[in-house]
Image (cartoon, rainbow, N blue to C red):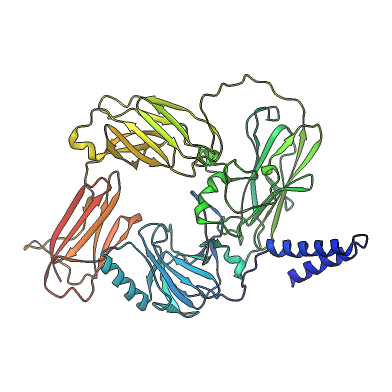
Length: 592
């Protein structure tokens, strides 16, 4: 009805334009209807059912800002516990089962006949039919980690059928159900709100601060060439800035805002649905969280003020676009959202922030333009890297190749080197700064010093963060150089990982050097590695491969006994290898 009414209104408007020839009117009418329909996407709002069969409550919503990505679905609360029944939202078939100790953990994908796929992640377990099928895949591949695609006739599903129990597997930070709806053809996630899911929302978005950015050499804010951040004040149900905050601007200026939304008072701080920026009543920037591609989700680092996030853990969303920003959320952006202040007039800058329910918060800034420029000593640039091109940097002990479109904006690249001490195998190379994000990995090569031949296959590149933590970056050794791919700048050097992983258990041996597990349902061990991380593991009982599940965030590796293990004496063997191929073995006998 909305589409019909809007088209009808536009058509009547055109008919009233009687001064135009009928052919022109018909042509304009066609383009009016075509452009409207082309710009709209409708979704089935009564097709899918509730995946939890309860009053849905959000721990996280679609499109909110996460580390290195936009969130692709709803995080549905499960009363802070595991084991809630999870139901298929529509008829279809299980098209994919993916199990990993990271990311989505245990996840089910259901393809529906209407062109959409639903995703259920961080699950504790599957129903018996799915569990039986999945176990056969584990054993056929002899791997806990699986990612298998299914045909339509393998595991058909009915709407409302229980498919799993909710859990906390993978990268989940607490019990909940991660729920998505994707376009089956494009794999692009779509905001579940658009499919008619009702969630109580009676609170308008909160505004924490606004930020103003000088974006050109001559640009200034209040006579300064630095970023201006202003805390928002909430009073009488309105947002404003401090009355004594006078803002003047010259040159190319960008604006940003830090905001969040809660569905109910005291609820989780989730993302907002849309942000709009007006200049003198004219929209110059708008984005909304309808859909995006996983391929481009990392552009969240171009969408936010990444440098300020690194310094103060803020989430300022820029209302202007970086030179390289391909995320699909933007609409009606004029001049990349940048305003050129080159007059002495008053400009009214207005932010409009909405959640999906339509609750709205606004904030107005009064900005006085000025033609007066600030003269400063121009800093000589050394290495300007164009983000749209490949950039290379070479010195005697380091080589860097940054592919085109790996950076979000052009940078004045910086590099320095310091000594790491006499026993080090390389100096510490400071590559630009950690406040600059990258979309794609670049090639990093560091020359080594005096590595014994026996350790060359254990050599790797490591980074050292601001807290002194060592992070494994990988790499291969060849001709005294170690080469790797990384998506971060910072401090890098050469490390050696020759220490094998640690394997521990808490069982006690009896006088016969056996462990009594007759009353145990599982075999539990913990595994850890000091640098490169766990690459693989293999466990057997009496020489036969067994399925051990890996909960990486707890370093827990466990096997659940099944009917294949009979009463009597058995031998358990576990072999764990890290990413530099150091291996540890645990071997013990047990009674069952």
